[in-house]
Image (cartoon, rainbow, N blue to C red; front, side, top):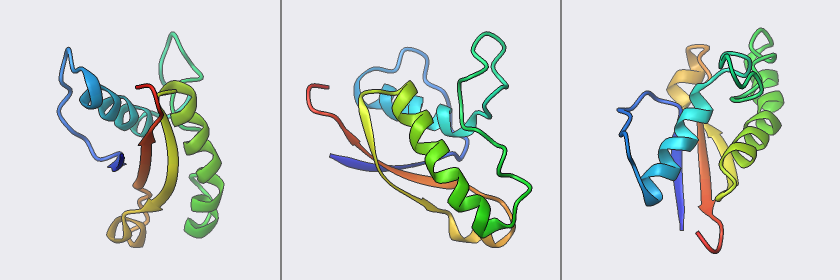
Amino acid sequence: MGLEISAFPAAIVIGATGYDEIYQNVRTILATAKGSVPLDRDFGVDQTFLDHPTSMAMAKSLPAIVEAVEKYEPRVAVVSVTWVASEAMEGRMIPRVRIRIRDGY
């Protein structure tokens, strides 16, 4: 099973379970800057690439996205990372991450 998830804001469902919980967790990881969570400064995606030219920032952010998602949501594997084209043209990097639920979950 595969699904694309982006960092666009979405309503948080308290008590989400199953696949909904997994998708919500991945969206939260993508939308959180590393260093911004007080009790877990390692949570989220490293943002040190932000002031680079867009194409370079996209390339540098790929391993950071994969690492963060697979570390904090071990039930998924990242299949691919693309970008929301209209946002990239405006200088905003909105990742679209295709995930696969790992066997056993």
